[in-house]
Amino acid sequence: MKRTLSLLSLMLSVAVLGFEKAPEKPAAKGSAVPVAPLLPATEKSESGHGGEVVALGTTKLDAFEVRASRDKGEIKPGGEAPIDVWIDGGVGKDISVVRFWIGTQDAKGAAKAKAAIEDGKWHTHAEIPDPLPTGSKLWVEIETADGKKAIGSFDLKM
Image (cartoon, rainbow, N blue to C red; front, top):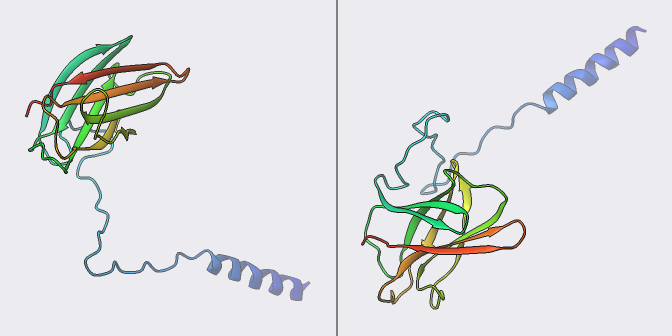
């Protein structure tokens, strides 16, 4: 019995030691280190990745009320623009995919970017075509779970 308890004690010690957290490796010189957000998780900020945002307005796309903004800054051909879109005040209902692009409605020369849900809205970094076509806008395409699409645009307010 004593031998069984000793063996059991040894097995538990090995098991506990086996779950000990491995030491973290230091970040390589020059590599990015994640930083905790400065705002509590429950607090929402209307500022974008770079601080201030440019409100692009609100419009109706089929049955959806859509509001858009972009981070303040120059729209430079060959660059990118962080874009946020709220559908019906948030992420909308029964939506499977949201895509953004900057340029013309036919997206010629533009890259359509699939947005992801971030902080209760749709977000992505849209590529800015080079050359930037005259009259370029932010285009938003909403695809519902049943495959229907709604497309609309916003003035970039450059």
